[in-house]
Amino acid sequence: MRRKETTNNNALRTMDRGDVEFETHASEHEGDVMSIAKKTVVKAPQTATIKEAAEIMVKNKFRRLPITDPGTGKLLGMVTSMDILDFLGGGDKYRILEEKYEGNFLAAINESVKEIMTREVETISHKDSMANAVNKMIEKEVGALPVVDSNQKIVGIVSERDFVGLIAGVFTDELVEEFMTPDVITTTPGTRIEGASKIMVRNKLRRIPVVGEERKTPHPVTDKIVGIVTATDILGFLGKNSLFGRLVTNNAEDILNTTITEIMETKVVATTPNTRLGDLCSSMQLEGIGGLPVIQNHELVGIITESDILKAIKV
Image (cartoon, rainbow, N blue to C red):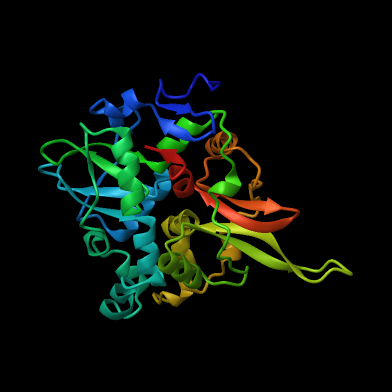
């Protein structure tokens, strides 16, 4: 098999038909999940505010932040970018802002992060295998698993991106079109941040392609990708200190009425249906992104994300 030298030692191999699999001996070794888990984990106490949690996540480019007990170090919960989008108006946690604080955004974002964090967190043992980690992430539909020891203290965290890194550069016959999601939920440039948050939370999406009308005479109107907005983009907007200079009142509407044109990425990195997964993962690593629109003949035909790629790994 041909692969980059940086690929994790014997973690992956390619079969004749191109499937990416864990080698049998690798998946049987107890504790090999720690070979790819990040051992330095940034955490926050449950007394941290929502604003502080958002700022930590933006600064470190995290999509999730473990919440621990400062005294025991035990895991108490996890706050994710989706939890914060939910709070911003995407879902049930918006009630904190709307009802408890009557729309007072400044007061609400200084609420304790424990009010919006997920308390029942899926974890994996430091003695577990990479194979078990992949299976659990797929089964539980989570993008990362905190790694805990016998005392329930965090000793690492493993994410979809860590496994994408293993596939990067591996030569396989697997193609993007076999794992991409063909039915793409999109939005338009005029969508407000609140609306984009609702789309993401309700559909469990971390990114949405932004399309605009393009007229090509004599062809009919088509949708052209003009940008992409991610949960991280919205989180970054919330976490910026300059945000508060924009407030006319303390009302959340001053923030939520902002359209996504102000925060979306306009230089969109895309892929094609016939791209090999190993090459795709290399591009994703290089660009530091978790998902790409799939384009064919200048048309949007799908989207492929780290979650989709994880399903390509047979364990």
